[in-house]
Length: 316
Image 1 (cartoon, rainbow, N blue to C red):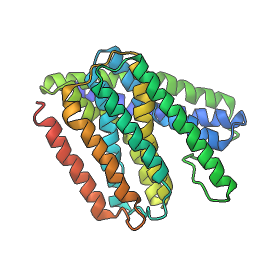
Image 2: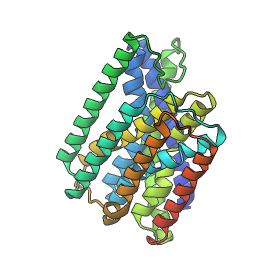
Image 3: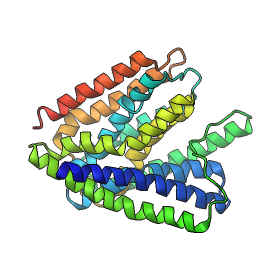
């Protein structure tokens, strides 16, 4: 019953998140907001909405392990699964991918987050620091993209086609579905995950790092699969790096205001460092002479399976 509740919650999160993004993008374009701004803000925040509402629900339910596992586990899954599975389906040619600047930002955000975790329970001022970092990253990304466009370089924006003539009632319906479905889905997922953890003797941190994290990473997985099939390496890598940045700076920044959030000890000794190591792995994928082929994709997925055994084994 608890597992079924979790699956229903995940389905609601994915469906409601997609509806919210489509409705918000259509509304923004109707209001005349530039596509670049929409891509960097509305789409970026919208695709991270499932992780955000799950984090808020977990914090309000005093399930700190799920709140941290949701973000840290998603960042690990984004590299090992969200990049690995699409690479198995269709190799991703990143040799001309201009993602090094974003990668550096992601690694700096990871180091900042780890440092704050070692300082003790996350509270509002930790969240303020993380949100300030997100603001700086968004501003820098906007300036860099504008400069690239001014120089005549092609810039791929992670923006799904939306009908600009979409009627107002449909836009309102999509946004309403997203606003209602996301919190309901998050509640079902968190409560179901806690029930699964209790039934199988797992810690909330372990279930957050696996079931919850993989579930909330499904939208990123589908986006990256489509980008790999269309051979849009910049969109594929940008989706992963951007999601990891928003998870650390935006989601944990916002959720920290609901603190104090106690950092589980196992995160300090293992999971945060695995997350940092996965971020470092992305450098190999961005190196000019490398390509994320099927062999590397299998290796990434195998690493995630091994990590899953490490997480679930000792925490039973």
